Length: 206
Image 1: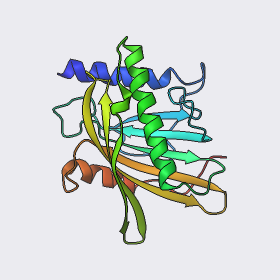
Image 2 (image 1 turned 30 degrees about the horizontal axis):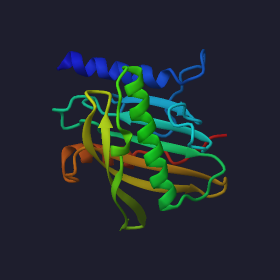
Image 3 (image 1 turned 90 degrees about the horizontal axis):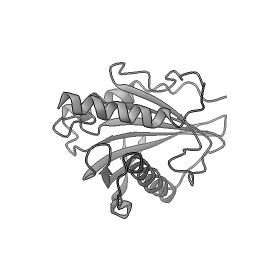
Image 4 (image 1 turned 180 degrees about the vertical axis):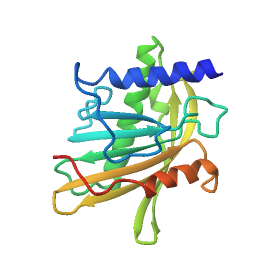
């Protein structure tokens, strides 16, 4: 199993690195500074695996050590930030459209890199609703995903998405937590909520 997880992690890293400009210096975390023992990736827009997404800016990701181990409590558990230029609002429909384009493109591209076929029509948002958490407004999403990083199995993804305006700069952060585990009282989600607490809000892309 350890060999499987390491191989999948390597594939994940190679997959994203392959879309970076050749010779580009490896980017350091700006928003997702921790946890340092989670994997990190930086991807600039446009995304090669989802070219119909037209946002400007970049994405940062932190993925759990057990992300590619289906038996792990951290299976497909990660956080990501979209740092979007020239964008001061996004509707719920636009968020759902983004999720469909992003995850279908991701699954399709990974499958293609492994000479596999995948029916991305199975990747769909099945539940979505805004909730208030104190002064925060969070979009709760449940969707199905095809994990082509492993064996193409269909898995549920539970996401919490928050929009964070950058008031004076006409920019926007979309911050998301994701896991296959639905129990929000679990240690898995406790780790994700710690990432939210430590999110670096105080800078933006130049």
